[in-house]
Length: 232
Image (cartoon, rainbow, N blue to C red; front, side, top):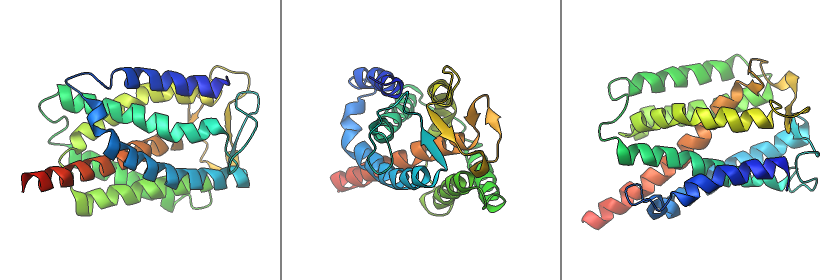
């Protein structure tokens, strides 16, 4: 198995094994969750395939399966199932074990900060493909939350986001060359702003934000609609 595949397997095993914890009962939300994961996957697989085709980024054949489907190795396809699944598990654990919503009084300020930050990043980096599109998508999603959804669970989301950055830095650090002579995933330096957190382009933290928020948004929307219908 490739290094990338081992990383995906390791990311999956813990959340999958703990999905049947009685208090969390993650498995009960799998159907709406996977609808969100599929929608998120469609969006980013289309984008990532175009990026790989155009040389915005690419994959080192030493560490991934050499065959490509829509310009992407099979490990990258699995990324958009496994990583959101594992990341949303953190969110579900927080909701199960923390009674009072985290960041209750500042959650809107945090959302506005990231909204303005991602919008400005997109606005001033329209010539850098990876930076522009990732920040634009994140800012649009956050804008929808601020103007229309106004979710009551954003405090849980932000805590989950900050916590999930810990495994994110481990996994993504390995993928970007922290533990290998060459990176598993390489980036065209002309298409990013060049600020890295050790080996990780700072844009990846925004990429991770969207890949967590979009599946949660879809999952919570479906669960709320289902609960409302059952209450009638």
